[in-house]
Length: 233
Image (cartoon, rainbow, N blue to C red):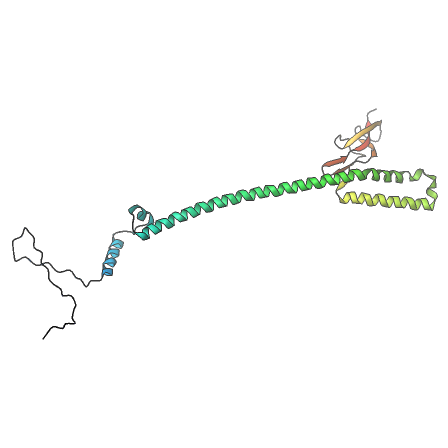
């Protein structure tokens, strides 16, 4: 039978390797390599052998041993992750500092605004207090005026009293409060002694009479109270 010309498959040719030191012609020929064996099966055998012998290599081992493009890419990725972590830590630290600076700025602005408000209110109240004093004096002299029997004058005093109460209410709404005086122990921080007198009713250094009312806004003194203080005989 004539050979088929289309059959071009490679033929397996047995190869015999002869050792130079051997002169025996009856030596057994070496088995030919199996050319049909799948290369992937070799890889599987290698991996199986690695699994049997011990754990697989980690990324740190790959960095020490070196490797191909895949290993270099893993090393580069790990280096990039380290850089990103360091950058994130720095950003968090900067954000914390900015937040602390903003909190301090907000507190400072609120404090300055409160101080400005109190200063303006104190200035306005200081200008209104003399008006309030005059209205109060007008009401206190009512009993000493003979014209109080007149209806017109009583209506006039009622109007003065109304204005006095309204103005006093406005000052209280702004936080302005009168300084306690009569019956209180003399306090040089909020009282100003104009006169002293011997008193059987009050103990020494106790205020017996308020001549001019004092006012304060919170802890800020707008005007001290002018008072008369009891003393020992």
